[in-house]
Length: 98
Image 1 (tube, rainbow, N blue to C red):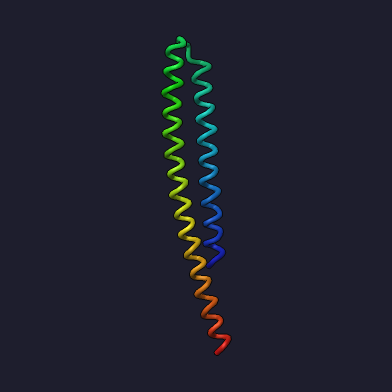
Image 2 (cartoon, rainbow, N blue to C red; image 1 turned 90 degrees about the vertical axis):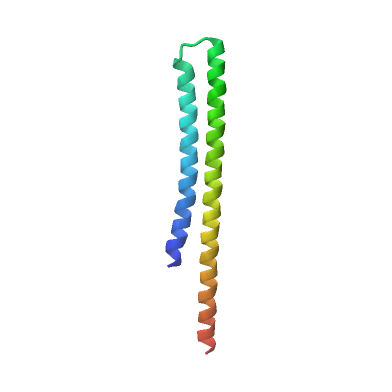
């Protein structure tokens, strides 16, 4: 019962980190390719960089919010697991004492 909850918590944390890492990697590759292959003037390129930077900032902010929400959820689930374990321990203690 508790092992399943613990595994679920561990997998959820790794999944969020992996998503953020892949997103960041993709964003960097995408911006780099866009700059290398886009035949635009300096003014247009600066505008493109500015727009892409703003989009990246918004995406990172959104991803950060998602990570924070997932962290809160994992914390709440972890607290529930601890409370259940404490309850089981208390019941077992009462059984042993009679």
